[in-house]
Length: 213
Image 1 (cartoon, rainbow, N blue to C red):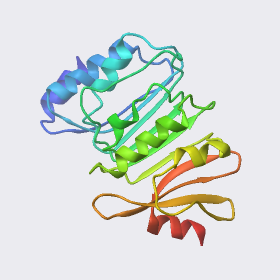
Image 2 (cartoon, rainbow, N blue to C red; image 1 turned 135 degrees about the vertical axis):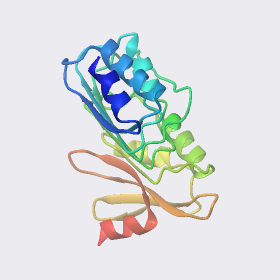
Image 3 (cartoon, rainbow, N blue to C red; image 1 turned 180 degrees about the vertical axis):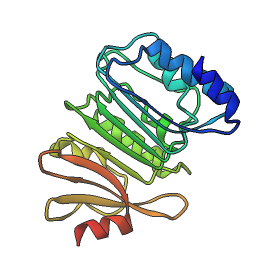
C-alpha cells in the first residue's frame, strides 16, 4: 500500500488530509487515520466533506482526530439523532464545523483555541445548554479563546448569558455583549451580532474592542 511505503520512507512526516464529498469511503478514511496515528506521525490538518448520513465509522474517524495539531474542518449532513462524545479532548488550534453541528459535545472541544460553527439551520442547543457551557469554560483552564456560532436568536441571548457577569448587557451598533473574567484573570466578552448570520461569539476583550472600532 502506498501509504505504508510513504510512512516507512519518511520517518517523521507532517501530514495534511482532505477527503472530498463522497470520494472516499468512511471505512477507508478511518483506516488511513488509524494507520497514521499508530505510526505516531503528525497530522497537521484534517478536512472532511461528507454528504451521506452517519455510519458506524464516523465516530471512529472523529476519535482518530483528537491529536490533529493545527486545523480540523468537518462539513457533514448527519442525522438529528447522531451524537458524538470523544474519549479524550481535541487539541487542534482551529476547528470549523459546517452544515450540522448538533452532534458535538462542545466541552470535548474546549481545548481547541478557535471554534467556528456554521450550521445550515438553527441549532437545537437551548439557552440553558449554552449558559452551562459558558459557565464551565469561565471556570476552567481550557485553551478556548474564540468561538463563533451562527443562527442564535436575539431573544435567547439574555438567557444564555444570565448570571455570567456582574455587569449588564452592553450594546454598540449591531453588537451586544457582556464582559467576563475567567478564573485565571483573563478578560473576555460573550456577545452577539445581528445580520444575516446572527452570530454569537467569544472573543478576548482586546479583540472585541478592535472589532468595534
